[in-house]
Image (tube, rainbow, N blue to C red):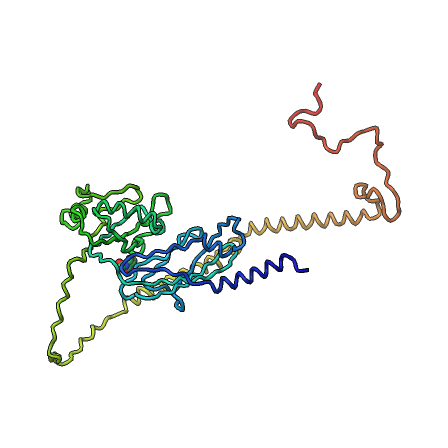
Length: 400
Ligand SMILES: *[C@@H]1O[C@H](CO)[C@@H](O)[C@H](O)[C@H]1NC(C)=O
């Protein structure tokens, strides 16, 4: 009987086939600009549960990303995911040397069902489209990298910096967790964050206020640690506030003077004289050290051993110290016990003819079938088993 189960199985197999031949995901990145791709758990949830669109699942998932046929990611690309219940992020800034196609394999493991799923992401890195000779880096103290990478937060931060810079033409160059720059992992308490460096670039020159970051006054004020007069940072959301003293300008507009050319010599090394080996160091006498570190502890250990042996073998209570009096008492005790027990034994022997004490008789003799009569009439005296129900310390018989 071919039931629904078979049909579902067939459909699943077809779907699995479809998933395998699924096309790669194509994205683009630009040299010198930040690339961010969010790996959404929701998207992969549908891959794991293709026939359960109506039901809402929230499975923990972990991602493993690497360049195809390589163990690691391309060197410009980084991956981060805070928690299996959070989305993952692939991010980074390609440089001129990274132009071309980067194929990244993404392995997703569903931590509930332990299903896995593989996806290929092709990132085409194109040449730089914007010149960004003016760049600046800002430190945001109250953020962590995963909270800054979503595009909405990036835009909020950019808006604030646009106000400082006085231009709309700003682009992200890089976002880095402070942990990648030697920052410390914060305490796991509310209000403690790792901190994030954001680097933005523009073709518009710095505003007057930003230029103050380069002045000596600014550096002196920051070192002194007091109030910073020229702090013109703007933050509409407190979490996005930049630390003014950790902001730096990276001015690429002026060409960097090339390093001075090395001076070329004649090609022949100058005569330095004959090799003169250094003198060997003077001999040292190690005897005092040997005595202090080996002989003395050794002697001490032997002395301690001897003391312990003496205490254990020769000074034991009852061996050496047993004097005549103690011995007498012990012998006396021994004899008393011995005498008493032999007396008891002779008494028991002499009783062999007499009837057994009643207390040792059973109520019913299994051999003879004889029943021992109760030793007292039932009704006359009532002897309670437990003389209970009386308060302690109270006289049972009232005195007259
Ligand atoms: C971006 O930041 C990372 C981490 O600090 C660094 O290794 C990389 O060189 C930076 N890239 C650019 C283009 O600044």
